[in-house]
Image: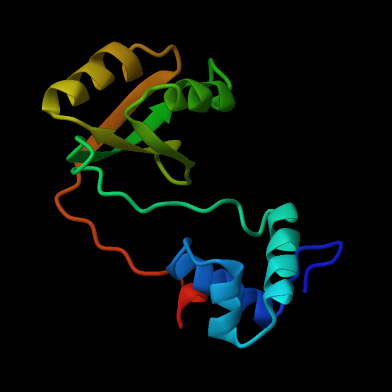
Length: 156
C-alpha cells in the first residue's frame, strides 16, 4: 500500500489494472470487480493519485477518426548549441507533436507526430523542425500499422 513512498501492493495493482483496462470505471465498479469495499478503492485511488502512480484518466481515441490519419515517427539528432529541454519544449508547442522521447543511440529524440496529411508533414519538417537552431539531422518514418497490447500490470 502507498504510504510515504510509492510502493504498491497487490490490491493497488489490481485497482490500477482495472482502471487501465477501462478508465471509465467508478470506484464502486472497481470494488465490485475486486470484491473489496468501495471506500477502500476510493482511498487507495486518492493515495495513488497523490503519489503520481495514477497520473490521469484518458479516452483512447482514433486519430484518423479525429482528422489526423497520418502518424509518423521522427528520429532527431540535435546540436549541443541549445539545451535539450528547450528543444523538447519547442517541439511540444507544435500541434502535430504527440510525444517526445529522449533516447539512447545515434538519435537524441524520438518524436511521434499525428498529422492531417503529407502536406502538413512537409510544413512541420520544413518550416518548424528543420529550422530549429538545435536541428542537426532527422529521419522520418510513416507508420503503416499500429498494434498495441495492454501493459503487463493491466492483465486480468
